Image (tube, rainbow, N blue to C red; front, side):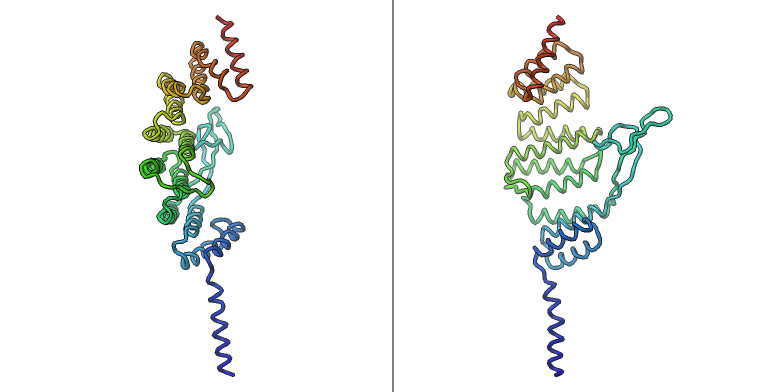
Length: 310
């Protein structure tokens, strides 16, 4: 009887150990279920990730989950008061003026714990090393840096330029979790999104990053209207140099006379300068090429009105 008891006891101790050996898919499912209830940095998440890492240290999903844990833990939200209309491209959470009528708007600001952010980046670096052609992982790392650096996206810009170099020199077979096929047009559109993100920061450093990334793309994609328009907008909005801005817009229109972005920017420039002659030059293009019937009709009416004032 004693021998039977010993065998059963040993079996009882072994069964829980066997049941704890989960597959990678099981861990991912448990993680997603837990996060849906408590959040990416909630109670129990780190414990589950530690077990997952012990069993599968090179599971990319585990490393992404660990990045998410530390990236969420490293953030702290607070309100700051600034004498401006926008901060990091965002409107104030509480618009205010002081007793003298000056702007004193309140904005949400996120501060980051450097050590925890470093932990997050290390996890993502390991994931990228395991799957170097996963473009979504590269962009996730750049997104985190952009958020962390706020108005001065120096490291994010550096990584984007390196990514552009790799794309055009090595031609990797990129994959992306939410995009079926990453061709050249998709890649350029993704980079253009970062140009826009830098532009919307509203800081001098953001504007320079916007210009620098656009110019870097033009070294590989010469005369691309997306990035030529970007450079034109840099000179128009950031530097108020209308002559240089017009040079880039006209370069676009020379090869792409139907480029609506360039046409609109030329009209904006003309109206900003109050240059009727210049406006009359580009209004016929809007009449001909605008995608909206209302825009075509509005441009035609404006042109007719200006011609009457001769």
